Image (tube, rainbow, N blue to C red):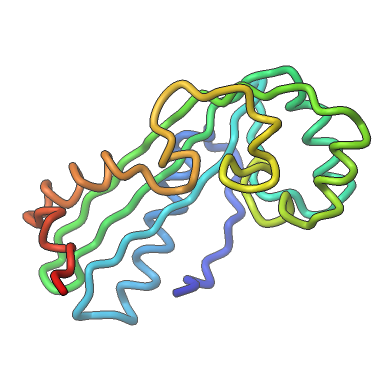
Length: 170
């Protein structure tokens, strides 16, 4: 469910900003879903002390990839879990180092033309067309996809829910 929460946040370090945004989104959705457990997340890439969310245009995506090329950044994902039935809440942060390859200018142009980088934080996703441009990651791969599964398991436990309760048995 789309929260409708504005994603603008100024003057807050990247790692804290993604947690605050995830919490805002979760509160907005939990208010509409009183009998639910709501998970919300927000991700940004930090590179050279600068935060990168979703690029606003193709030109911005090209510029981002020119910065990413041959460098490494940290993908931060804020997580918020709210049990709207009980009011219990838990927030957390997962951070993973991403090592970027050096795609050619033509590869960057083709990737940006695919439209994919306009939909993801940092203009990349390891499970999409940018996968061949990622030399490696250090940390939780699921975090780079937008949801840290190990962190989710711990957060669920903190509010009294076992991850196995979410498994459906046919």
